[in-house]
Length: 79
Image 1 (cartoon, rainbow, N blue to C red):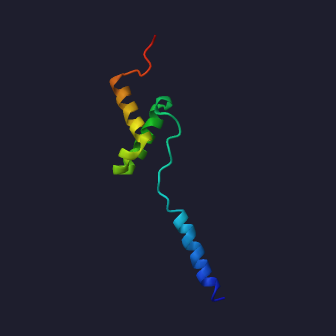
Image 2: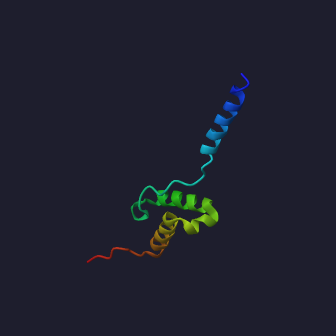
Image 3: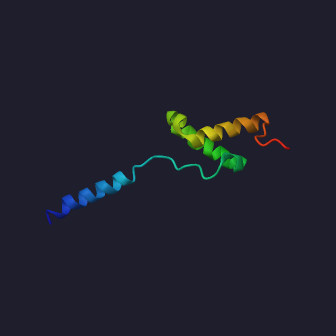
């Protein structure tokens, strides 16, 4: 019985450590293909990252897409 308590405590500690990964999920699709609400949701995820936003390629793409949409820029001009 006395061996069971440390084993159970170790097991719980490992489970808790495995569940503490707070890295955000990657963007599901390219920002160009996202609708307005999806883009806003991804922007909120990036906002919650704080300083780490600068290292997240998906956040950079989302912010650029929001700027382009605001300014009315079309990345693929008609030919």
